[in-house]
Length: 350
Image 1 (cartoon, rainbow, N blue to C red):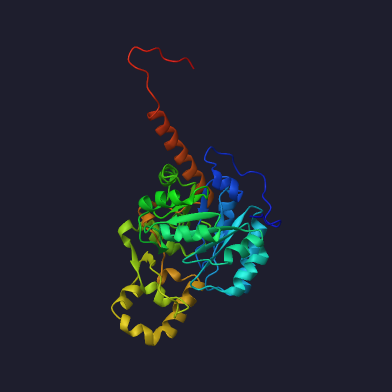
Image 2 (cartoon, rainbow, N blue to C red):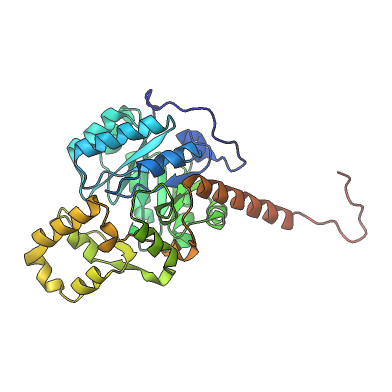
């Protein structure tokens, strides 16, 4: 794996005992990755996460290539630290993928399917490859393709989430990953989640829903308020998501979209039979809303970690709080499990 000469790393954002092999591999300071958020503009968020020492990410879905190039330019203006550009199989755009390799980010991440020879192409361009997986078979396939990092995403996650709980999935993926770092995703929104992930053998965490509810994320305040007010049971799987987003003839995938229900979704849940005939009209309506900041009226992605989110705060504060809380928890657990002297035994001097 090479390192892009354009992705220069600035002075360390912070030093922390939380630093893991994931950090060394990706050139980051703390083991936290922000989700790419598909078509939404997350430049401000990605820059803030990068500057706080984590790995910020940008999505590519749906948006035209000129828009994406402008996002990549803006992000490079705001940070010299490593970041990721994400792609998915649904939809996969060869022109956009080739352009992202020419942009040479430090990391290419990939979701929802077999990357095939894309991994080699990324490595040839000097980019690390981070692959999201949802079960052990997908993990083995990604390892065979040469993935540098695996994100084990559990069913609790927002957007297209898996079908195995994070607590059960992560150690299974760790067991087959060998020396390849594993990142836990799904249901993680605070330091307790990071501490738990490290205890399971992961080398870091990826968070989406928590970072949606940040001041820098370019979504409507109404969506952020929905996240603050929602409980975990409000974040539901809904297969209409795949019907409503292009390309409308894409193959089905076992992963379902997890999001908050809206009046729009409730209406069409009872009229599913009408959608095939009207998908051109309704699909354009949904895409236009997503691209103009009204996506929350249709498809407000959210994971079950909404039950842990009680405010909207700056992304750097989220990173600091997660790391600090995890350090405190792991330190306390270490003290609690330290051998205790037998009754009457001398206490070692300090």
